[in-house]
Image (cartoon, rainbow, N blue to C red):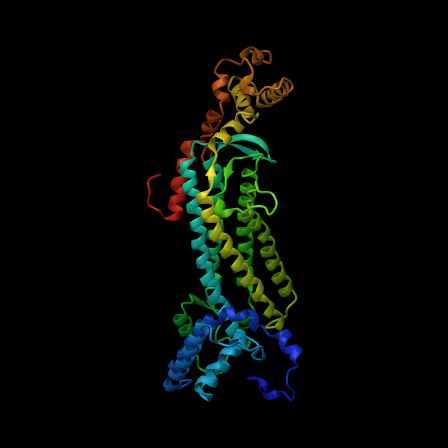
Length: 462
């Protein structure tokens, strides 16, 4: 069967070349976007007098038949037609005859495919914004229930200072908020119309690109036809934003894996998000957060792959750019699965408050507060820091924690210590004392929750 572009050629395409260069195996994902773009394009052509109203109506009818066949699963994709655009156009011509050949007037596959991908990512980005908000909602609900739950806070994975579990979880809320804002901001550059740019130089037909943009819901039109067909920044931006989002999800997944271990026992993941062992019947494995953590690497790889493809390309379109789609589809699929799992996994996890409380009573994470205590008694912070270090060393050598020492033991280091030091050292009081804006005290967490709900546009009293 001859190619729709085959007039200039004297030989059929080598079958190996057909298979190697075809993209229909994956760009069929863009079928609905491609038809939507064609419906708008043909209406614009009719309104501008480029084709007749009768031809426009017949082409629209044919496109809708093709769309129904695609949606019902009856459409047969053919690798000999290379890509989704040629497959649809060939099916259209088969359905309505030669008039279907008028559809491609005033456009090229170069601006057509770019338009499809813009439409696809606008849809996906808006979907992911909704998914991120679902994760944030789950975080906020857990935080509300654990404002006064004390958890060991870590730096270098070493006990640092007691914090509220709500405070720890809300740190991820703000990470995801930045992710959401990046996706929202990216829509300004994604929701732009390339269609009408032609192959690279525009078209001689009297088209109205702004009308096409209006019909498709685009907010802007590329002002330069060469940029319109060669720009893939919007995909790179999506992959970059997705990489940061996956990194944040991976960090939270890592904590879930650690916290649910026998060594920590700070949380327990719901059975529906874990799996067992084929040989060890006692095992409950956190496979979902582990796999989510691993899939971050493939999203990073998709970003770096496209950066590498684009780095040496001259203007305008090059066949290399066919490699822009698989990584985009793969990343979208990966994000969709990860976000859909993360929200319910957070919502259903059990927080083991007593284990957290016990852990924070068996460390030296309250040391900073007695350093501050001595500063308030007139000692410089550097002198206090050195003295508390010696007290911690003394406690370790005597297998005690700071709350286990007697007042007499404290006073052997300095007479500035008084009975009130033991109130200062209580982990809950250590947490409650951090009242600076953004701190871990319950009153500041309530401020933070109010702000979180404001960002989620949820009208509730926190």
